[in-house]
Amino acid sequence: MTGPRRDVAEMANAQEMNIRRRTLLAAGLTAGGLVTSGLLSPAATAAGGSRLHPAVGSNGFAEAGLPIDRALGNPTEGGGPAAWTDAPQGFAGVAAHGRAGTTGGAGGRLVHASTPDQLRAFAKSPEPLVVILRGELVFPQYEKLTVTANKSFLGSGEGAAVVNAGFKLINVSNVVFRNFTVRDSYIPGDFVGKRPDNDRDGIQMDTCTHVWVDHMYFTRLGDGLVDVRKDCDNVTLSWNVFADHNKALGEGWTQNVVTRITVHHNWIRNTHQRNASLDNTAASHVYNNYLENISSYGMLGRNEALLVVEGNYFRNVRNPLHHQGPGGELVARNNIFDQCSGNTGQERGQAFDPAAAYAYELTPPTAVPALVRAFGGPLGGTDPAAQKVITVALDGTGNFASIRAAVGAIPSNNPGPVTVLIQPGTYHEPSVIWGDRRNVTLAGATGNAADVVLTNSEGVTLLVAADGSTVRDLTVTSDTPQDGNVLQTTGRNVSYANVTVLNGTSG
Image 1 (cartoon, helix red, strand yellow):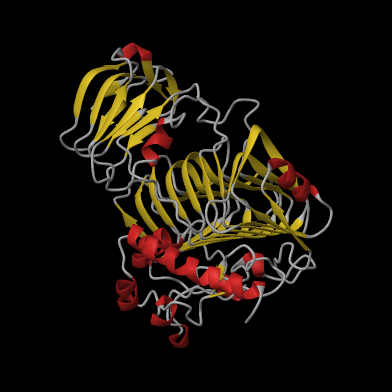
Image 2 (cartoon, rainbow, N blue to C red):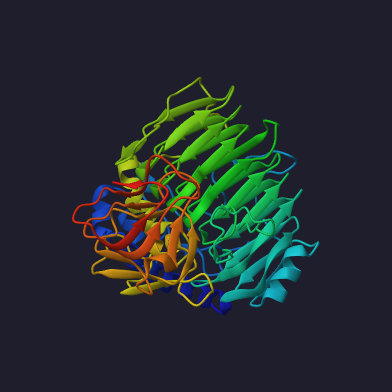
């Protein structure tokens, strides 16, 4: 192999080794441990192994430095899925609506976007395009970019991001999003997303078909992370990370029962609701996802929705699985509920048979957390770096504008103490110090409890679930008086100092 193609292949192999080493260590795994478990074949761990090679062709995967066919089981023995594939698995890969599957801009021109102006122009161009995003594209004012049909948006290597913007797909087909981050369009103080100017989705699709969202990272946005709305069909969400937000994934806004969607191998963490909310779907296949630290509800089927939910791992999720409303059917099998409370999915009806629509392979649910932590999201991973002090401020001067985002920036099982320092203001959000964030101090910055107010419109405003937590110099209240707790403690050895509780109780 000579010329540019050799450079691409060598870059992909070197990058692949570095990425695999880092992601396995971040997940608390070793390559040898995964081989022993059967999740990663020896061939896949070898540098330049036959199952790890850059894509060759017009889809742009090689040019973006993406691996494909990263095997997670020995393919000769029929074990394990591939974390990076050259085509979508699930309903996005099914022939329908005059298309054989989802290819995005493959076959069109390959272009590069390193500025907001370039991305905006390419997204709305009428021609098929493979758009490779380079670096961080920061929009000075929030925009929801219009996307036309036959587009691929691919992050180049590690670190590609779209900041303070999202994507809007209206009545289009054949779009691919892979390997970049969409982040930080949060409106300070509007955690519930009800302001009239807050329609800041990461991706909004209305009446669209054949959309594949893969190895993406969505965090700290204004409204929904991904909204699949108004009679969309043939959608796959795979190997993504959805984090540190209120409403993660919503499907619906229609009375018609037409949508078919596959949601697999995603990592949903530190969110509040819609994980996912599936309304009037003709077929929702939700498998091998890892949901952790969710404070309102996990997966919810609504109305006539048909759901098959299998092989998922729920950890510390309130109301992890439920179906409500008239009609609809739910099949729930082989799911794990670890430290969960509330609804865990009472089966109703037969729903549908996913295997009749497409071939797929289930990961054992016990292996899902480590697997998704290691290989979910864009290249380079999404685990936060350890910090000793994280500041929260509504005026943009802090590290983050919400307490949930600050807690999400603390690594799971953090090695040392962390202080979340909150600047004066009213923070309208349900806040949680999760049980795997130990030795966290949540503190008002001025020492005056009246200066920092935590409030909420539903249930508990502040839940302290982590051992060794400290809360000081702030007020915990509710929008209206209530009989129950607004401050709740489930962790051990939690200390409080100069904390005012209003409009409810503590316990």
